Length: 95
Image 1 (cartoon, rainbow, N blue to C red):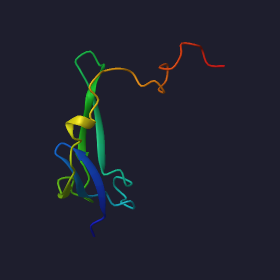
Image 2 (image 1 turned 120 degrees about the vertical axis):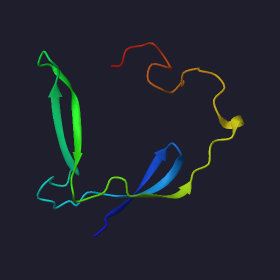
Image 3 (image 1 turned 90 degrees about the vertical axis):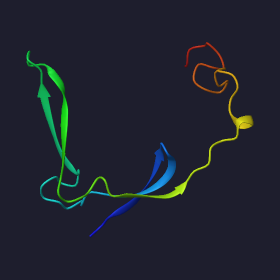
Image 4 (image 1 turned 180 degrees about the vertical axis):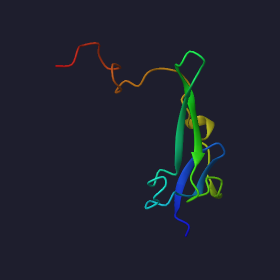
């Protein structure tokens, strides 16, 4: 049985319908796969390999709706910080 969810993709900017791992899978316990960390020749951590579980297909996805981009006149023109953001209004330390 397919368990579907909606995701927002950033490239291409769209809503995508994707399959999810089976939550009651005994092999992966609902995580969708297995992580295998490995080390380099000195024994230090060098990365991880990912092996997907048989309970789902991570390539099964459909584009539902392309999302529009902001018009140029609504985009920020300067790199000025947000005046209401953290550290943007005053330099006083918080209480």
